[in-house]
Length: 114
Length: 114
Image (cartoon, rainbow over all chains, first blue to last red; front, side, top):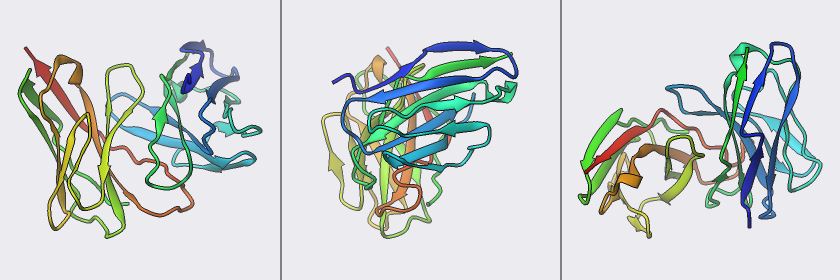
């Protein structure tokens, strides 16, 4: 298993541009989520999904959209990038929504918005 | 979810035990204690979790006080590769609207030196 994969690893955008951060897992996990991490801070939840076709907002959802058309993929879309979205983005997955389930994280995407 | 308090940083000599404390004085009866770590430029990695009993796995031991208001993560023989930020997280043991989203604080930066 490849686990949780994220692409791209690095990205530079200009203000106002749009892009999609890709996340995929091959573990047949129901639960997937997106976090952002800013310098000196912990991870903050952006959006999450408890299964295909179901998504919901986390702590900092503004400026981001998600969809979950398949179990494997959970892309994060920036519709109009802003400098405040400069961050490292992590995708995570777990088998189900239960608390005994370990979350597995991807390697991250480093985004710079100029 | 209960709030956690961890020291900002700790040092440990290679080969010695690293004991990382965490206070969670407002923890509820159904909340688990989780530990994750994040090595520089990588995604967070699950270490261990527990409810009230002490737990041990191949990576670490988790000691939870009888009143469950604090816990200690023990890395028995720290190596240079254990240098990372360690996050203590408490999370309810039931499925809620946020699923298994983990609320990360700022964690403890553990520096292991030779």
